Image (cartoon, rainbow, N blue to C red; front, side, top):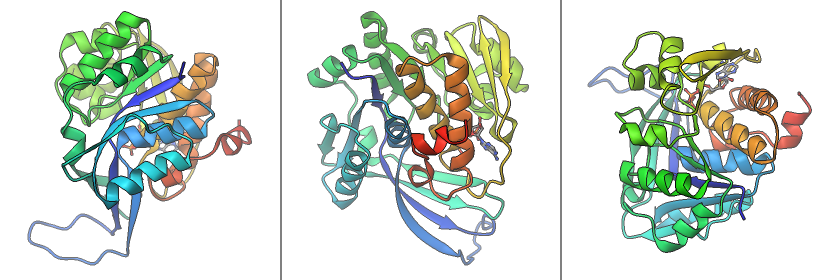
Length: 295
Ligand code: ATP
């Protein structure tokens, strides 16, 4: 039995550091360019694996050099990749601008991530044997919905990061045990302006809502009301890329290892605070030893 199965995207992040976003028609200089394994799925899988969980990744990459790079990156962190399918579509890419204030803007070209729309038999077996199934919305919605229905029927706990934000069928939310939106995603999903109201509203559909609020920490809601807030750890952010994925991956990893919700949230908060002080997404994620030292 595997602890955590991540059904998600794998992209190569093409990262440019630049002072601000250019205006339409404007050309400007950036200060650096790097390639980093990314995609919300890969990021969450790596965050969970670095935190000590046994992790299986279900994804799709092209039969190209980027795909090989991503497979090797997952394996280097101990993530099982038998469920990472090779397809005849280019590997997904994410074009990330990291701005002077540490904020980021991202354009994703899904490529292979969008090519598989149904679970194969092996993936179905993998999901039904998991303790936790984790997904985001960078793979086809049909695929995520199918996986969550299967997991729910098999008694596997389901965790959804609803990013990028998009309208969701009520059944997918009902099949979600833990929903982890950021503020913007919560507001978009609930159709409300206030993020705490949005988290409360969403929690009347999904089991538990853990809304991340950037430097303001997180808010937990259940059964239509706010349960409690999670204070942030105050740090100086240099690059927030992957903060949410670190938070989600670490939270699920600690829960899968039997930790309480409160302790798992604390670990996730500390891990994400470390991630924002380092550049990149998967490259910024701490090991469990580094998180534990600050707990
Ligand atoms: P991203 O899309 O940049 O990966 P996100 O929008 O999904 O992130 P956020 O809500 O920005 O997620 O951040 C997730 C968690 O990371 C927060 O709940 C918080 O614990 C931590 N975090 C984010 N930004 C900061 C910050 N500037 N200082 C301290 N902690 C932070």
